[in-house]
Image (cartoon, rainbow, N blue to C red):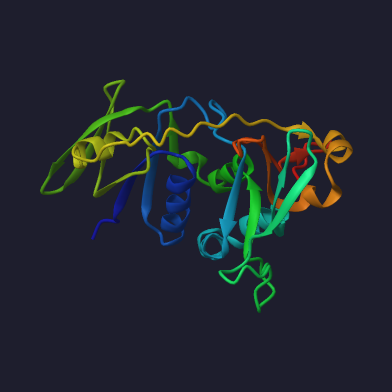
Length: 239
């Protein structure tokens, strides 16, 4: 009996996470990503991962990679702080349970949520998968038959497998063909973000803000103007 083969369109966090667990289950995997390389396009800077996400990564990653994930993650204080446009603190809101009581640590001592640098997490998830991941492969469509599925790429190449997984983002070619009735809805929300060195953050913000889950600056209209909480020291370590 031949081994099951899964084709994954998209080498983002979701596609790589799936590939890691499939490889651990001895399933043959090929990953195809339209970007020319893993660092070709910056995609955000920080993610909040809750308890379910942390537990999932513990199950997905080999022990050595999970330890690296833990070592590069931040355990934030369970608060969101609101400051004005002069960076003066206005309000500090607990971000615990429904009773508004700050809850950060589980009974077993594990974090309820953590902050991670998105690029760092992607690098960890890609480790060990480089030989199974092809970059610069923009998927156009797929074709199915009784024996499986064929993915067709912009350069004319194809890939054959038993299952095709669409993990190719908001403009997914897989979703467009599989669920043409599904539409993208624009929420109208826009964000501009950036990072500042840790020494400058310490100069302008209260110390506890640097360890909060998130910090938002707002003007008199209560319109969020900026987010804080992703700071770096000269070595590149994130806070």
